[in-house]
Image (cartoon, rainbow, N blue to C red):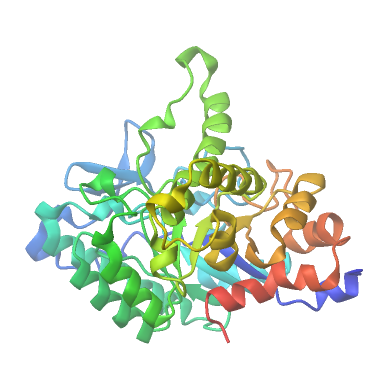
Length: 394
């Protein structure tokens, strides 16, 4: 059984964290002389009483909303400016110190402004500009991660509306040290084919050849369901309820990859369901296996030589951060430990980040108090070995 001394010896890899993009990220890298105010930039909104990202007259989001860790109020309230947020949420040297304090060795880095699949930069009418914006973000992320390349792990965005450009960007960023690709799980929301469509096969093939896992982060598609409850229910109750539905909605993504034959066609390509939690996956696998057999899927697809649960165990991963106790234990027992990854979602709202308005504890304390009963070999897989394997960290 694991003991605190053994836990402390594991180099914990946090597979889902977010950078908070600096206000000058794009204006310092993309010509405003050519593109004007279409280049994403930050302004103070008197109406909203907060800094916001703008592209032309389009609001991309609140600039400091992702910088929630350590904030004095709980979500959905967030800092109005980055200067009101904990510096560890946006300044790399402070982030590294926070990682030390939390007991985290390395973090995988995801975006905010472009959306969790790059969808905000996908309008084909602005293809030239959007390509520049995606490349600028990827280059900035490369520079950001260079502060500690063994601890900060960049994951690239891609211009998914153009497969040739996407493959070129994958090769370019892989050479710069990026360890994965973030992709929308609902590209049809942006006018592209569904992820199960063979349209994407050239990109899957390239990712497989390059050894780059494909990450599907929750909220990377249609977000129109954000206002789920009736207005009288209250914005806080709505926030708490709808956030969980986005996690479970990842079941559609996983089912599409399996039933659409993507896993079958690309057996060496790994996929990651990011920030989705894991306790619902045993039901999904049990249910898919049942329907697979009862519907006789193989009569339609004799080439599918595995059950859905077997495809999942071969090449799909999922991440957890707050789950513990009987539900997590049962998930590990049912699925096995090889496809589960640990994250904190730093510095987002409801992340595993201690603060005056949060009940969260540092990763090292959560691991000791909530996961410390797990077998040492299992714990090492969850916290380090699985992430090392899927992201090719050597």
